[in-house]
Amino acid sequence: MWLKAIIVLLFLAVLASLTSALLFMLRDMGAPQSKRTLYTLGIRITLAALLLIAIWYGFHSGMLSNTAPWANKY
View 1 (cartoon, rainbow, N blue to C red):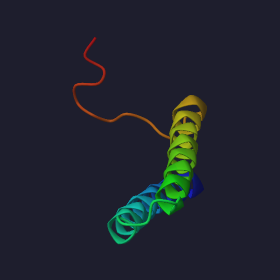
View 2: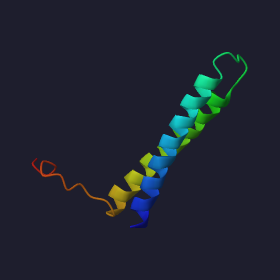
View 3: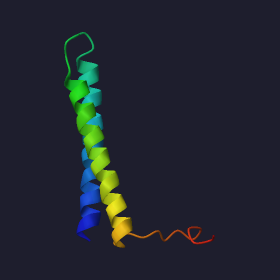
View 4: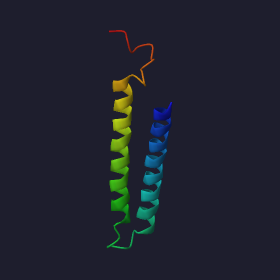
């Protein structure tokens, strides 16, 4: 259960980083030296990588499973 909570928190953090990057991009349109959007991109990439690692770990350890009806057809 704790893994699902971590996955949800990481997903929400990715969305928050995406939103802040959008706001920084809109506010800093005229500022040529602003790197806030670039820094939030790095944060978002890191969070997305952690999210993928958490999902992989969940499937690999058996804590997560695929319950879609078409998943075990083949």
